[in-house]
Image (cartoon, rainbow, N blue to C red; front, side):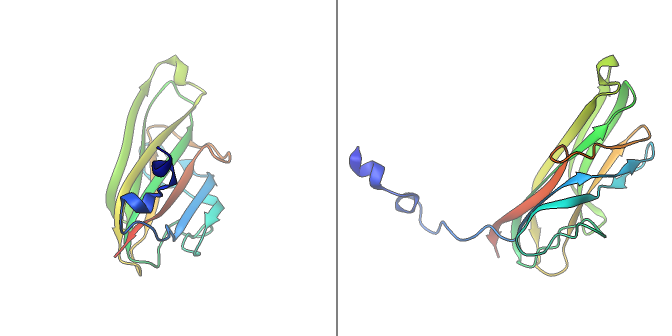
Length: 162
């Protein structure tokens, strides 16, 4: 048993290692919604941006400079005013291709004036030059995102360079 405790992960798996950058995490979205329309979510506060690949002031998108496969995740925090609404969070690649989606229909008095969130994540391949992702949200009512650090977030990191 003592010999097993001395072994490292490298003893079990070869080819493991490297860095998981570029990586980013942003929060504090302040986005308003028009009922029945998708809106780009503007996560304006960077928590982490290892390679300067996330635009937190203009386009609110991640454009990694290393080609490869990335784990991308997002949470849209909705600030509800209604007891019933459909909420969608989706990851869009290059502005027009939906690559992942989280969708829920809420109903009942509990949801009125309470905050809810929708999570979405996916593994996406990037070319390392022009591919980018951004997040969109949708609700059936006029409203906004919850503009509190950590309630909503958008992030990702390199899994495997190509």
